[in-house]
Image (tube, rainbow, N blue to C red):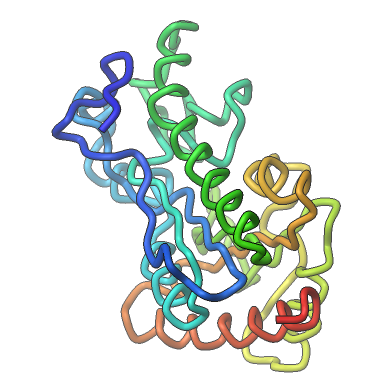
Length: 259
């Protein structure tokens, strides 16, 4: 356990969690917004319990979906144990969105006017060990002669700033669209959900940081999957979505990397 700059204590536990380490599949799942847990020292960041339960704190259903996908695809899973409010691990340290002062309609008092030292402490405690572990797992697998296909899993709110979102699943990519193209082809044939490219966000919104950091430089096939969270709000719906996505991903991986 690393206790860094007073942000984390031994009672908080590790920053990053890894499951299915011995996975035999090609896919490496990453869930940056898996949890709404805050470090003890952070308190509530001045937010109400409703705000801390909402989508601004985490991606509801994303971890449960990731775990199901891990089992169905025999995939390694790496996820962040702390809320995106203390540090959003899908943003680089220089981004204002890494430690946002406001998210949608919510002001975040505990993130207001952070000093350079405070930002550095959060980066060192939350962001660095998370991405170091992803790098280590990818390097280990590459050293074993295994392919790495990086798939990040997120959920999004059905209503944003009062506007309903019609898209049900977003397939997001940066400059490497190989896996996204294959997934979108499969989704068009399946026809079960409304699936769109780079929606409700795209690379211009800064949401492909993890892909840019870990997949693009190494040439790993990669994609970011966004699922509308009302479609994965219970265990039955999560299983339905996991079956659907696992089928698409398996076919896409086979088409792109051959296994």
